[in-house]
Length: 179
Image (cartoon, helix red, strand yellow):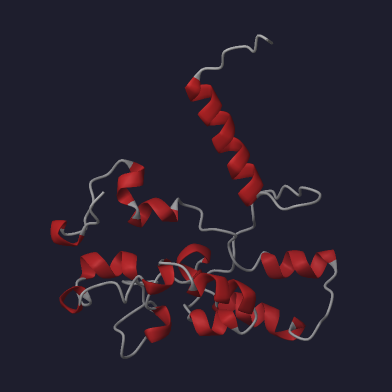
């Protein structure tokens, strides 16, 4: 019988987790590393998920299957006007062009594209002339991608998933998931 080296369980789990991460999140084929993105144009407005979907339909359909898309719907009616809840369950709440209420800004209900990528009005404006272009040049692609953030420059996830950032949860105890 062969003598295999003993591996500490923690090391095995770390290797497995790293492998799973790489498998799930790295693209197949050549790996392209992107450098820090240029700052998108200032003075942007939120446009809403439907306008994002008009060009990014596959991403929109994938997002619709997530809990982020249902974040507003998951709030009980008595919390759908509570600003403590709205800052995490809607897009751009508290910003001039962000979510106001479901009647006037329904396309910003839930955690939408612009929650992570920032307001999209300038991106939409810059991309409009290229809407029917089948294949972009590298320069054109860089210009279009540079008009919106890959992700916001702060850790936007931890803003709402506070316990992941080692902060106390602001979710009312009655609404917290039992673990």
